[in-house]
Length: 323
Ligand SMILES: Nc1ncnc2c1ncn2[C@@H]1O[C@H](COP(=O)(O)OP(=O)(O)O)[C@@H](O)[C@H]1O
Ligand SMILES: [Mg+2]
Image 1 (cartoon, protein in one colour):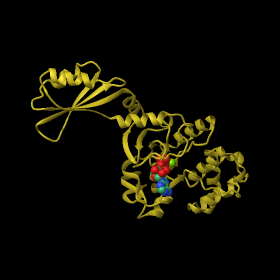
Image 2 (cartoon, protein in one colour):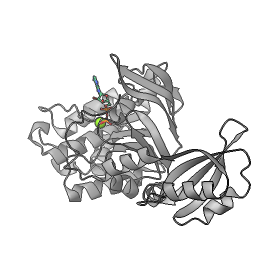
Image 3 (spheres, helix red, strand yellow):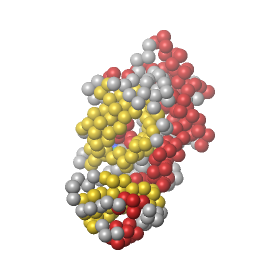
Image 4 (cartoon, helix red, strand yellow):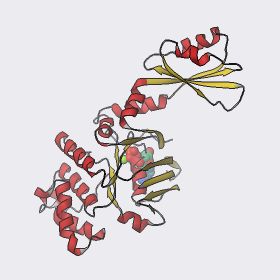
């Protein structure tokens, strides 16, 4: 339903996303998780057909977002980061107008508007002028707008930003209910959001996809272990077994180093403890020839730390980001 392949976007000579690849199957709710400035909105704007990529391809509902832009956009409901609402229109008129733009037939428009207002829980403000609405209501009118043509694919950019805690829970439940019938991709910079809502998560950091998994597995992987890469020259029989029995080691996997002379072992260690010195002595004292040892997987842990910071602390516009 959503297929993204090697998507790259540069603003001037500054890279925003690089080689982003992922997909979402029909009915899936995919979380797009990353700190501010990671490239979430950039990716979503491209997916929604609002901006071309520098390179790479994206398809939604089977249509290329660039070559078949019109068909792709017809199949997508998009809640942008900053919803462009018309402040002088009423909610009902605005949604009717959006339904018309999206190609909803005249005879179905009224029912579509009513349904989308119910779904986004803005029915009680149907005849209000948008400019008079609170931020929470405006955000939900944005959601109603994305839903008004009942599109198979929904692209929701930080749908709960600006909502109060009760509205956040309501919106998450609404989105959960959309899965199955719709394919949803939603972005967020807070980890609990994806655990509460999504079947699968793509983590993006500094413009690159750094992990993809179920929320459960990610939480386990992120909080459970650190990985050390060990390279040994020549004969390495018995080393994996020996490493496995080392204190602090959870598991050992054999990897390909690329050269036949060197054996590579990926050692998963308990987190919060540096086991590298111990691993080095186990290898050397055991008579194996240690030629390399380094901790890897740290970047994921760093992302995790950024993602678990509170919403307040990370709400400012990011300036660090994509090199
Ligand atoms: N219109 C733009 N012009 C120049 N740089 C931009 C523009 N929009 C975003 N960027 C930069 O691209 C990177 C990714 O931004 P964005 O996609 O908005 O990230 P996110 O939505 O994850 O916070 C950031 O470094 C941001 O400063
Ligand atoms: Mg954004």
